[in-house]
Length: 226
Image 1 (tube, rainbow, N blue to C red):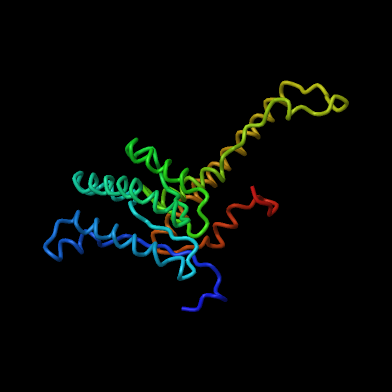
Image 2 (cartoon, rainbow, N blue to C red):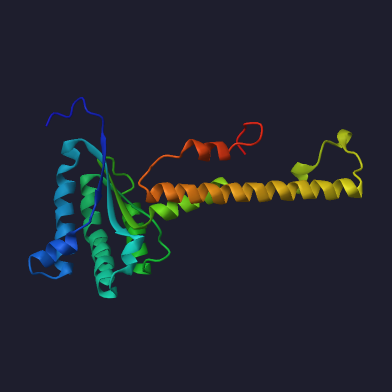
């Protein structure tokens, strides 16, 4: 394959069906997962030759926690062993390893293996391998919406006008200002909930865009974004 004039590729692989592959051949589901890990080694060996610069492997989703505990333990152990064994090989091949997704629910041993692999391979430039562990697109949408609508605290000093412009504000004026501030916060909160609900509905329907109604809701009365 001639890749001289092709831009570097980012390829994503969803590791779905390994367990079924094993059971369809009369093997335990764990055998299917191990076969999938072995197949990944072959993919890594040829990916740079195919002009692939980034390879994202969706290895364990948040929904996979609902599988039987025995199967979850096998998958976690398989990920741990893979990182331990493959890290030296990745260093030799110039492969940088990153583990994306939540880390607060995985075992300390797996978390330590992930951090060690990332540190040891951080200088790799031939291929970037991204292992997605405990990932969830719905949770990513939720966290993104929370960050977008988070109200930033303003320090007391930044709220003070210049000394020459300071005037005495009556008690009634202060009360009215606080009420206006609370109304603005409630409106921002309601908009955030509406935006998140519509984003989740769009995801369930298989749509990957924000409709024009959502964009309009994110604008203020004067058309500016709130």
